[in-house]
Image (tube, rainbow, N blue to C red; front, side, top):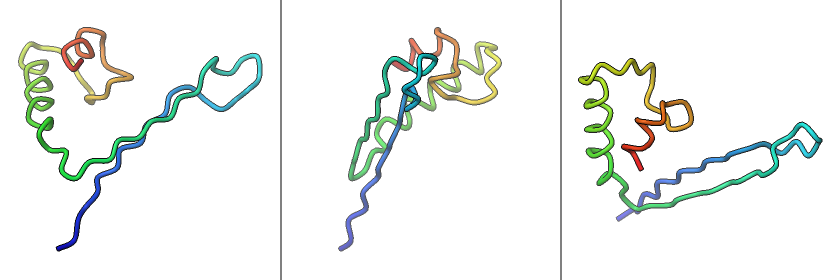
Length: 73
């Protein structure tokens, strides 16, 4: 039986080491065999926000309002 690995990689900041670049650059990775347990919880938050009238173009932590990010965390 083949095993599937789900790999999630994210970065924050940039690698521009000039005076105008980010002070920090962070890279992180999560590997999971089957990460779908949190999927339903995240969809519930997304649908709750839509039903409450929040206008979401997309559901993404870096661009969502603080109230949405607070619910996710």
